Image (cartoon, rainbow, N blue to C red; front, side, top):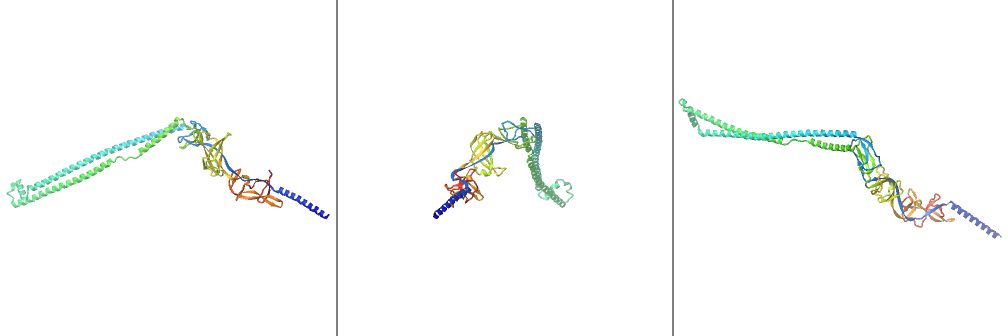
Amino acid sequence: MIRKKAFGIFGGFLAVMLVFTILSRAASGAAMARVETVKISTGTIDHRVSASGRVEAGKEIAVYTEGSQRVEEIFVREGQVVEEGEVLFQINLSELEEQITVARQDMEKARLQNQDIQNSRNQDQQNQETARNRAAEDYDAAVLKGEQSIAEAKSAWDAAEVALREFLESSTDKMSYSQNGEASGESGQSGQIDDSAGSEEAGAEWERRKSELEQAVTDAKRTYEEAVSSKDYSIQEAKRALEDASKGVTLDSTLEQNEITRQQEEIELNKLLELQAAEGKIKAPVRGAVTEIMIAVGDFTSDGTAIRMADASGESYLTVSVDRTEGEFINIGSSVEIKVSGKAEKITDYTVTGIVENKEDKSLLDVRIDLPEGVLETGALVEAEIIRKPENYAATLPVEALHEESSGYYVLVLEEEQGVLGTELAVRRLDVEVLDKNGAAAALEEGVLSGEQEVVSSSNRMIQEGDRVRKKEK
């Protein structure tokens, strides 16, 4: 009886323990987080960047007119598409006519100045020619006069020498000279003068006469030498004068500079006349879009560009600006899908042709897509989606299974553990290296996860490493 009662009590105890175990497992299961899991798989990571932009012409054209023209009216606005020959703006004709009058007066003034300079040059050249001719005449005269003076001096020198020689030959001694002298006119006194006195006087006279003739020769020779020296000096002076007169008139470049100025003024005048003939209307040289207007009504035009236009007759391009972080996923050759504002269909088969830093905002990148002629209208507003060519990865997970903290990325995987109540599931943290990711999936470095491991992708509550969890029933 007692034995039976003991078995009954023990059986009741087991029953109570079973109930408590069931209740404990139920309570524990109710307290556990419910999770969903995924496994790694092969896949691709796509990157799509969306941006908007406006189609621009591949070639830009500058429209300009003459400077200092008052703008009377502007007929276009930026972004407007205009046809070739369409009037862009109008200048004031009254002020244009005044400028034409002033330009003509300036040209006439320049013409008269040039004429005066030319007349002065001609007179200077004529005076120089006269001076040269006179210098040549003076040179010839100096040569002739010098030769005549030399000839005369030489003749006088020769005559003096002849006279001296004849004197010496005709009276070989003083006595013969005395006899000749007595015979020549002193015979009436011969009886009154003795022989001794006559001889002395005759000798003295002979010496005096010889000295006179010798002095005459010396003087004539000196005169000749002076004539030769004077001729050389006169000819040298006349030669220098002739050389100076033959150098020509020194001319400055005033006339040539004035002529260049006049030609420039003539070109400007012709431009003003062309503008007047066009009634002051500046027209579009090609069909295209107005990209920039750099003039204002009432202001004067400058010598630079007045209006910039995008030429719509050739190829065009699309430029969109994207954030630099998004630009990291874009490269030359990335595919582009274009959607024109207001149209449903997309234009495909185009690629990125250029990537440059935005000039105004360094946090942006400008992405260029070249477009063939006629694909899109210049100035059209479009949406572009840029797609980087996808890469295949051996280990990918949905991005919601990935966790991030300051030290990097990690995932939570399920592992079986033996607990008091039996086999249970717990989460364990694994640090992973992310190779690439987008908004939907992430590519991981191979070898960290196996294809059989289950990775927590969602949970109904916050969990951390070591927590016990339950898988949601599918």
